[in-house]
Length: 201
Image: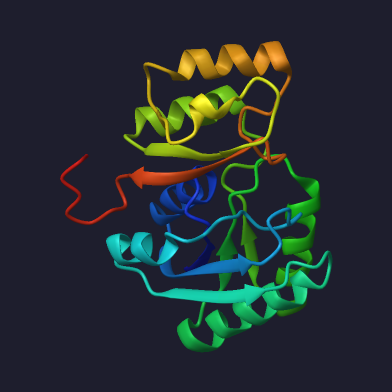
């Protein structure tokens, strides 16, 4: 099946894309560039997605949105419609893990457009998710922190098997979401199996 992947450049959307690509054809990426840095729906910042799309050799549909609550969904629907028209997609892939707010709204748009909605990471255990990333040679750095227990020393740090145990320990101590789905931190993928001719893998 031809799919479009909702893509932010972060670890979850990239892992979801990776998992979906094993069974389906990824026709394009869709990125929402939100002016609202505290958007309920979309990951920020997305400055590097163009470069990541080139590394994956996938076309990118990038739509700007003011990021106003609920209104931003109209912009997402417009982007998905563009993917349907341009690439004849039959569904979208999301990196939603536990956010009912995000997944239910994307599902509603897919229902309205009569296409499938794939959530490969839905309800996945957070520790398992991070371990799967590291196991599959995903390298990702933390680009924003906003939770007790995550100080500025984590900014720019690439998460790997050496410091993952420390991150897990902090999440248990300070009770933050290890997958960062509540905005506790934002990540950016530096290297992964989807990158073509990536010598760092």
